[in-house]
Figure 1: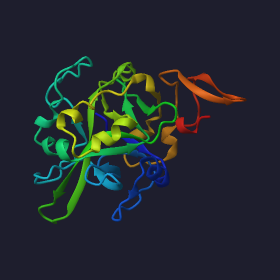
Figure 2: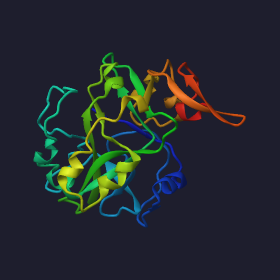
Figure 3: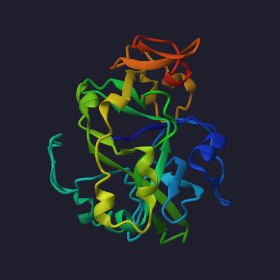
Figure 4: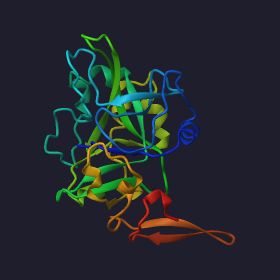
Length: 267
């Protein structure tokens, strides 16, 4: 499962990147170097595509009698239980009771800078997009739940997952969040889109546009939120082609190696 994420970008950067402003009811959140279930984070919803909302991670469907905190929703629904990366069947998420309504009319962009994944040896990795492509978005769904006892209205979201791409499979990871390209972000939250058009977006992000490196066990400590959690403790999984400014333009520079700084501080 995809359970922990990073959101370290400044609010002003997020607002500029997505051409939105934080909602009047939204309270700015601190930088999150490891956010997980019950934490609040920034999303952009299909209902209010020009506003930045602050919702709880861990969705409770509207019909629930108590909090459910669903963090991941499988794109394939009950199909492809073995997580076959070559699966080409239907995206049956809409057949799941908890997701039937949200996938059709309550979709959201979950804003993030990176996320954590654990290898088949239980080693934590920080996964990110190359070329400093951050913040980026993950396909999400949301719902509103009214606590039957307190009558409190809770707005919460879940992240949609799909089969892992080849880079993540190399460390034994079987699933990954559905990362959206910039060109598909508006399509994901466009309320008028037909369900079939929405389901076509639920595919693995290209491995060659991503990278990952091992991080310390600090990420396993619940509630810890410090920048050093992002620091690499080993080599990146893939060589990156990084444009380097030279006189008269840019040249390509291959980079792998280790560093004592997180990916977004490397020159």
